[in-house]
Image (cartoon, rainbow, N blue to C red; front, side):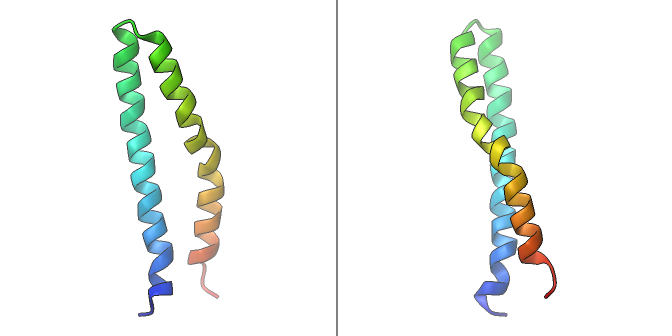
Length: 69
């Protein structure tokens, strides 16, 4: 199997990891906020917006890459 055949699978796994990290970081931001560091929690959630913003594009790109030719 050529390396190019593995690329979509690799990218899919990287995206899965990214989403798992986003969820974990969101949980930590909630924990921080509950302890009074509202500004920190808001900053963290603001930084996570990029993941949400890019998620749909990544999914569409992976769908195209994984579609049979």
